Length: 228
Image 1: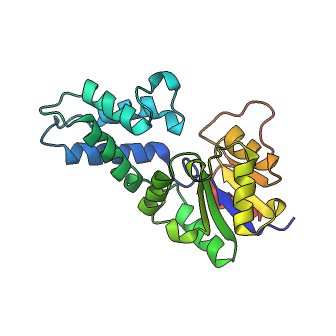
Image 2: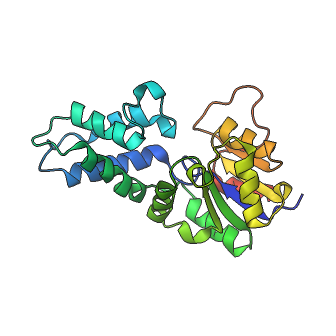
């Protein structure tokens, strides 16, 4: 089946979530350097990792409706502040800066450039707030590559529901069987895309797959080209 469009998950596919958390932690420590001790970066990172859980937060660790506010609350409670910002300020700091701190997955920029030049239609399908998805892609410098950027908030459907994949293929005007979806999560990404009739590639290294494992898997983004 001829591939005409390549669709991507965002976190831990195009962007490396943990490296992004480190970059954000460093930026936050710098921004609040007069209110925090100088050695707080590792603790900031540990707090965010615990609550964020790779972008899949556990409900019992969320003290507020969003990851942003839950992280802000934990930072206020657990760091040794000389003077404390308020919760809303620290929450908005996440929304404004976390996406801009995004760190690209190795090889992502080169791959997207090559796919775009080869004439493939490109899209992102990601669970989460739409403004945050756009900010992350802006932070990566990737926005211009994509014909469609689809979030669960935008369409009111979350992965692995096949409808969000079908919605995107319709927007691209490409039949599902001519779409290749690439993602790190065996259920949300691979099972969801295959249920919509798409071909799917599992980027290994971030989530364990229950049996049976996805048939087609890659270790690095550059390997995608073998499946086109």
